[in-house]
Amino acid sequence: MRHMSFTRTPQQMRDGTKTVTRRHPDAWATLKPGDSVQPVLRTQGLKKGERHEFLCPPIEILFNWVEPVEAITIEEVASEGFPDLTVHEFCALLRASGAIAVVGHSPPREFTRRIEFRHTTKEQL
Image 1 (cartoon, rainbow, N blue to C red):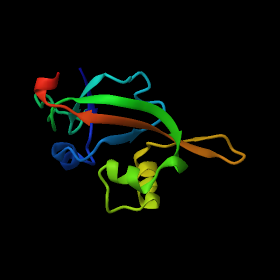
Image 2 (image 1 turned 90 degrees about the vertical axis):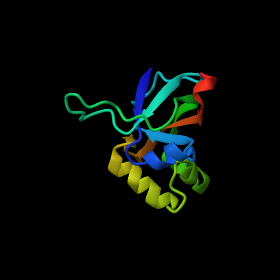
Image 3 (image 1 turned 120 degrees about the horizontal axis):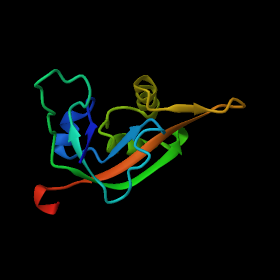
Image 4 (image 1 turned 60 degrees about the horizontal axis):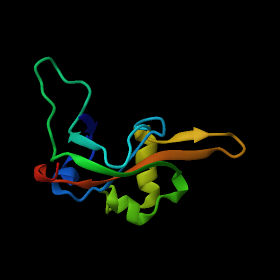
């Protein structure tokens, strides 16, 4: 099972309040509805002997597509685990994390990959 890092939102994953994540449009392109992914604190930079920190049982992917950044709503920001941020603040966070790609130049458009999932219990797998 593949691991997906949730470094910025570990508590939201543990609580089950995060149901959407955004990644760079080129990342996770082969993920499809029904796939299971194990949420972990981080996937890179583990020292020798360190193990992945599982945040919750595996998640089931519901939807996975690339969308323009202007499609992000305040409800989506809350689904991402950031109910106290504005859309503008959230998009700035995405830009800083590298989860946005700029395409074209007259005018350029920004895109991000939107992955929606549901939390499962071990018994559901």
